[in-house]
Length: 301
Image (tube, rainbow, N blue to C red):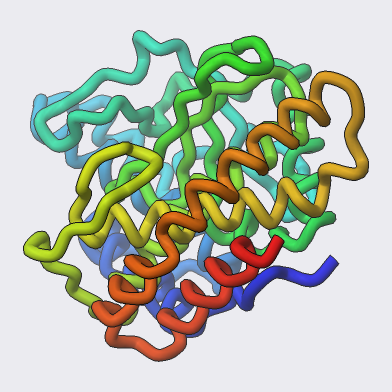
């Protein structure tokens, strides 16, 4: 199935290559340039190595620092899970391994010497979720923006599912799950969408100030334009995916997804006018058109 929009955005590709070079000039200044590979994959891993080595240096942990120096790919080659969008890093860290820190109020996990793969059942769940997303037009998005997947709490269908990304670890997503690949794919698409937009804004030097605000029906409060635009991009992506996959589900799952779709349609409709105004803050034509296209597609479903 065709992608809802062209996720292959040249400014992002250039950003990935330049950031990799810059990070490696800091973490491995004397090492020869690595062979050309999957820039998005290397970009995600490079940020883990940077974050891990910075933290080790800050707390004077020479053993961990030396490990990052010796392993510019975070020694991940033996911990990969094959998926429809390429090898992924699928983890299941304990919540106690996701501390907050002075650099992030949001919990996060950094690849480290003791990192191990998620159990086989969770890796299989993740692989099926990537396949579902890829088969419905989101392969390119997940290939470049959901490289490291941290599966957190197992919950029941209908429970509140927490998921997030942090800007310091682009290409990494943190997700609760209900053990169903269709639902996991939906949430992967949502968080990968946030990673995509963060990269796109940085790559196009779009600066969105905090002085303009819009009402967010998802948060039920007024939010800065940055957060509003993120919601008006990530939620429509999940609406498009859910509409595409709905007829291939049944039972409780179908009812759950149909209710989600109906709710999101109502919320999106209420953002129509404000979204048009918010898009005026996006200076790059290619980025603005992609945001508008996805929002319009979701509204039309």
